[in-house]
Length: 236
Ligand SMILES: NC(=O)c1ccc[n+]([C@@H]2O[C@H](COP(=O)([O-])OP(=O)(O)OC[C@H]3O[C@@H](n4cnc5c(N)ncnc54)[C@H](OP(=O)(O)O)[C@@H]3O)[C@@H](O)[C@H]2O)c1
Image (cartoon, rainbow, N blue to C red; front, top):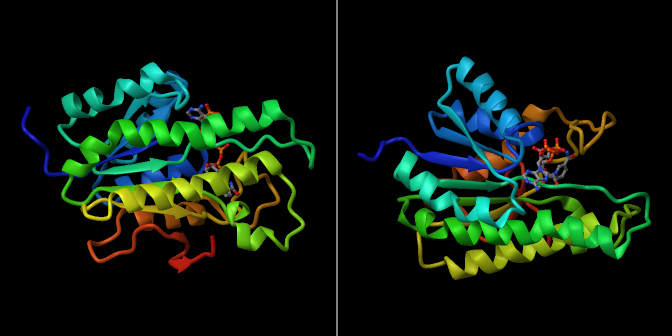
């Protein structure tokens, strides 16, 4: 199969919320988008919705904690598209009851928000390194900033710790890739009106997707190994 000239992006947890909107905004830039969804039917429905909007969208069944589905990703991208340029590690959960985390909750949260990001990234790095402009975006949160949370009323221990750990993965992956064309950054979307963010959130999903989209399409002189919100660096 000959390689298409278009960039190809994978957005994990892309069937709804900010992930679906990231896929839409990347698609609107002419990028082929692949929606990773743990439920195949919901993934296909989301991709069809974007196709009806005139975008080049596809779906792949991907529970990010499923080792077999993660292991199948490189062959999927190689065979279907011959390339992968952008990985948005967006799938995430926030399930802390108010201030009352358990070890079981820490484990299940870290499985999705941290361990799976490591696994998906490792699986896809060989393909991303072949891209002329590989980009990895880890969807983090200001709630994972050690500096910001040192003086804050928020208390979601499992979620906040997982996003702090995710930020460390960003730093280490960027360090590992510093002599390549691949850039790796953490994005804070803002507090966004989704199932996870809740109705009280001030930002629309469209606004919430912008930071990740910007980092996924950085020019060659853009930053790597940073933490950003709307173009501004955030403290670790
Ligand atoms: N909303 C906010 O205010 C906010 C703020 C800061 C950071 N973030 C981050 O932004 C990201 C997206 O959040 P959102 O607000 O859009 O949440 P959302 O509407 O709840 O969507 C979360 C997405 O992650 C998927 N997901 C969860 N576990 C998964 C798994 N094991 N495998 C594959 N997909 C999985 C969900 O799939 P299902 O549909 O199958 O459940 C869904 O597609 C998250 O990483 C979140 O931490 C959000």
